[in-house]
Image (cartoon, rainbow, N blue to C red; front, side, top):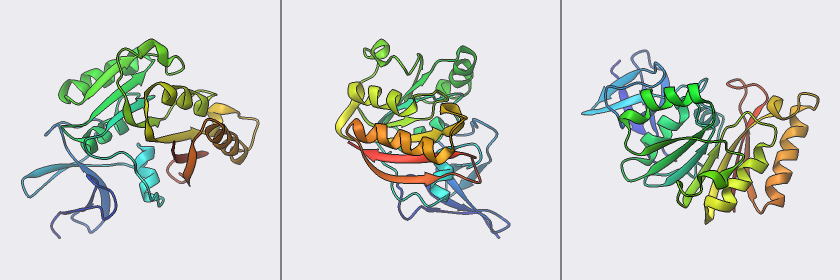
Length: 230
């Protein structure tokens, strides 16, 4: 069976790739041809190159496979990514937003951001790596412009608050946010469901309308993806 790639029916710039054995995988069109980020498979189809998107390495891919109905991140969008780490998901967002989009990558670990720079941003002109702490958005307010979306994946106790503080400075009026809640990073003494409700409550108190809450098991334990708009 030959490899086949088709656009996802609901999400622009995301694809379904059918591989030789008949299995279907998520994929994005590679903005940096011949370059991989985390060892993902590259496939060619009709003069284009695609990167297989691993849901065990990317919470956004996991959320899509778990039935997410809304991905606010679109081609040409500007995105603020809090907790970009070494760039696995950020690189797929770079693929999605394309040549006319831009993603600002906030990461506070020096070693990790070196990987982000050397393995990802060096080959992608629509990404800026910023060695900053997402808890203090005013410190990079001169480096980030207004954005359409904020994607937050940080291992810190006040995840919703950090996101909302950044939204106050950078998110456009009708913008959207995606928050990957890591329950164990917030409070190991509480049930994950309690933590999720706590973070949802904070978002609502800060003016967000929560549209979806997707549990990410089996790809990530004690995680949900929250999609909300302001």
